[in-house]
Length: 231
Image (tube, rainbow, N blue to C red; front, side, top):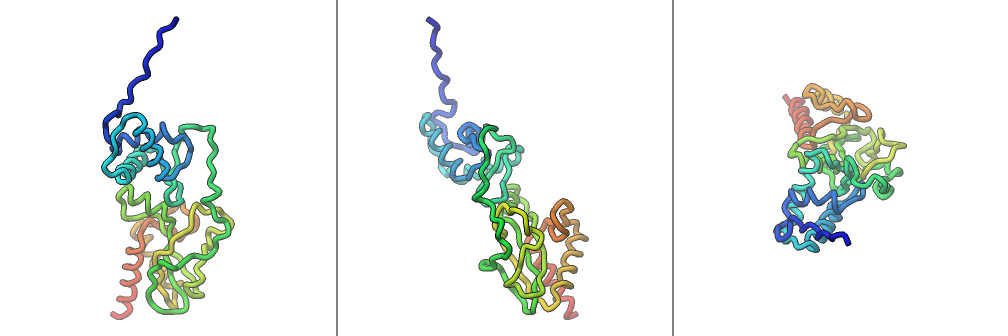
């Protein structure tokens, strides 16, 4: 009769969940190509507790750092939809990714509820971005991320996603900044020119209105432009 070998003891038994432990366990407990951070927390916490591991002092903070380590290591990437992550190489290639809940093909007008709106005029220059890009920048401790600087001549209530029509978007864009103006095209061209001069243009983005920047930089350029008008 063959001798039965005892199962190897859990190597993190009695130890707390640190970012490195979470990052190592992530691919073992989450086989789906895509997941939410809450799913990772629940799966890792359950697996660790069932095998005799100690609790983390701050599981959410430790998980955020683990996700950042996985991104930096090239194992993980944001999907573009807030809170969803995707393995660069899924642990289980047989599992199909379901992104239907993340795509909105009918969105063609942007929500301005939480936007900073300044100035006066018939049209406006606006800044919007996908929250997933901002999240990735935060994880990388970068103060810039892909944003779109566009304009409309019919008022900020009708800001439309002109270069996204007919394509599936990963998540609803966030309009961060709107500057009303009677000469929005002129103002937009000035902002684009300054960003281009600073080397911020994203050549591989759809259209010519995407830059690596942030809303504060755009606001500062516009404020400078208006200040120059009075000199």
